[in-house]
Image 1 (tube, helix red, strand yellow):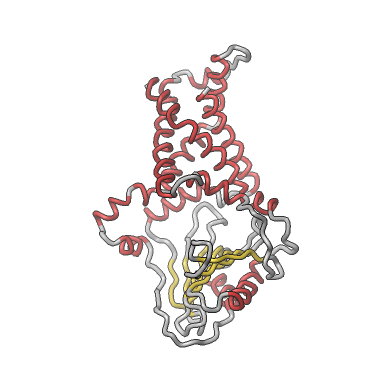
Image 2 (cartoon, rainbow, N blue to C red):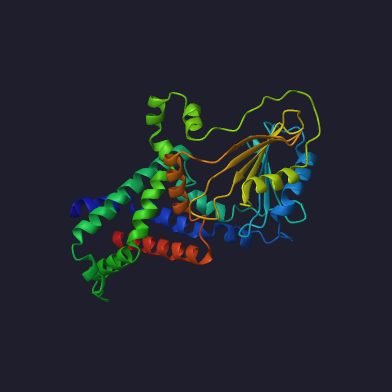
Amino acid sequence: MTWLHTWAGLVVGWILFAVFLTGTLAYFQFEITQWMLPDAKQNATPEQAVAQAQGYLQEHAPDSPGWSITLPDERSPITTVFWRDPNANNGRGFEFAVLDGDGKKIEQRETRGGNFLYRFHFDLHYMPVFIARWLVGICAMLMLIAIVTGVVIHKKIFKDFFTFQLGKGPRSWLDGHTITSVLALPFHFMITYTGLVTLMLMYMSSAVSLSYGDRGEFFNDLQSQPPTLQASGESTNLNDLQELYFKSREDIKGNPIRLAQVSHPGDTNATVTFYEAPTQSLMSDYTTLTYSAVTGEQLHVQPVENSAELTRRTMIGLHAGRFADTQLRWLYFFSGILGTLMIATGLV
């Protein structure tokens, strides 16, 4: 096990160090973003954000086939709106804007804020996303091997924890490696395994293809999807989306909404779908609610009921710490720092 532990850690340690460091900082990604975007004059609130976003989008993207509104919360006091635009000059097929509490666009600085750190820890920024995610997945698997073999080879791991010696050269680095490993060992297991689970549908996509052929059918079995209505081509005015937002909050017993998506705005077949935010607790219903954006009629309500999918989403929530309050988030942060130091001392 010793050679396996050494080489599993050594070969991919440099990537793991970067992944752990940026992932750890990303536990405060919203706070970092807010710090790097100080131009917001007024914090946005969910009670006003949908109406303000609707007004902005109707003015700037009335002909777009789809809108997306990311609502503010206590950690992220801004509203982000996206709209599809095939003619966007950024090559991404969409445009976006960030709104403050007055519904006015914030002129952003040239920074992605904390979101850069979050995306870097699994997209690596410098290479195609598909390759980067596979590379991070392979590294995470080797990390899991290194953790298991590390427990095996350190038969006296808890005794070694109390024998730290300074100024002993390589021995001191080994002692430091042991201490940082033991202090947050449950966290290291959890964060590595759940990290693999977050992208399991990518790593194990062949299983879906062999069993279903059509991935859409697979996802519909996990959770029935909102109805997709084709645009009728007949123009009409949208309902007040803010009213539908309050209605959706009532329908899920006051739980927060994180995202609203509007299909075919300005068309008689326009729909709006609200997604429950998994921030109240580790176990969420992840309810999706769809309404006609013209008549206000409820078209679809679906919590996640499949136990396997609930387990997967719970593990993702555990990995991302979205449910955590400030104290628990700091515990995540310090555990992540210990993991970063564990990798660094192991490399030395």
